[in-house]
Image (tube, rainbow, N blue to C red):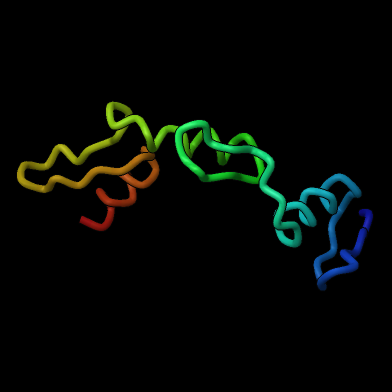
Length: 85
């Protein structure tokens, strides 16, 4: 197993590519992916895509229990709501 240490913290990665990803997400403030609908920006396209979904109300997930009214932008959050409620 490779051990590639981060020079900026105590993290040890298993490859140079995972170290690069770690540095990008933990140590860099650059956010090159900008939302075309607002002023938000993101470090990767996945986060940008999930954010853009929040601008579209028709894609919101809502609780089907009568009188609840809970809504979320992701199915995962809705499932967590069902487990808690």
